[in-house]
Image (tube, rainbow, N blue to C red; front, side, top):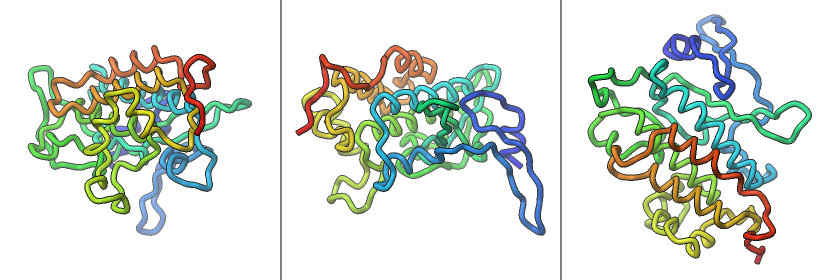
Length: 251
């Protein structure tokens, strides 16, 4: 019901359409538009799927940022509360190789604070690895919680690493905790970039994405940008596409 009440009132090209709902026996069913390329996390972490090129990754991030900017606007004032690569669906644009981003799963979303409030107090929900640490400690939620989760998604897109992975070496299970220092310096960034890109990306633009992610991951929520500011930055980054002037050669 929460998803119907919120998503049923929204219309945006980067938010998956809720077509209807019905019940079968005791099961309540939600019906969404079909997205042919399915979940983003499958494309990042499934070895059987062809890796996403760098330029497509930036376009996907830009589409997700547009959706979150729309949700955070004064007209809608919605906090998504579960930004992750599992909440981003991909649809293929007809007669092209371009993917269209579709944010999905607004069941945990809720209205943001009123004009005279800085946050709303809620039970902590979301996907571990993407939850804003301050929100986790206090239960105080505002749009900057979504910004933090989006920062984690940006780092996953750069590195090809899951936010949480118990199979990694001790101390590296939580990606953000150990990888943040590598994002500050271009030379270190090269070491942690997704190996599936085979070095085929403009280093300067990859660094710009990394720097934007770092601002989203600031410990103090007030220091983070708004999603509108993040969107403007991503739109200013042309792409991580192959460039003859700044591509790292595959090793």
